[in-house]
Length: 266
Image (tube, rainbow, N blue to C red; front, side, top):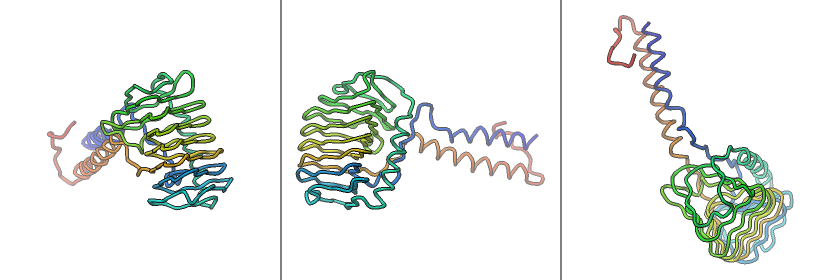
């Protein structure tokens, strides 16, 4: 009887392994996470671009005006084996994002709104940002589009309440276009191409599967470090602690002559 009680105790306390209901896991970018810009049909730097992270393109390895790319950190992998592996990982990440179950369908125009962590799409299958979009709260954000993502001149994506750029993902069915002086946040996973206008700043990654990536000049792209989703991390820590306590309890139950402590849950 004591053994059954011990097992039940372990099962109850180990429930800490289960993430809170509705919590999304971050999308695993694999080796693509090393890249600030990743293309499929080449990369063009029309003007100066500051980069934190690698660049690469495959199967077209052409990078036009590569001298305009200034690396804070990272390097040019062009069409090498590392880039090829990253493209495979990008395809897997894109499929993961596209397969996420939608939490809420919202308006195509995201400007002027504030959103909490979750998975979003629009009835039109596109998203646009005019003005400011605020992402409020720690967690994972996934925006799913059947076709395009477009930002207006001077638009901004703002983070508050613990939101992190590393945990924002934009799954774009065709092309993403950022007009002049856009301030954007998150990982753009585009099926085809990406174009960033003059002065566009991205706290995230521009990752295109089959098409090209074009930078208009005076741009900055910073690939953020991966940030574990807090709720899931806390749940895992609680679960591990629970298992350790539970295993210790079982050992006590097996101890010769050890009385059952009625102060433990039973």
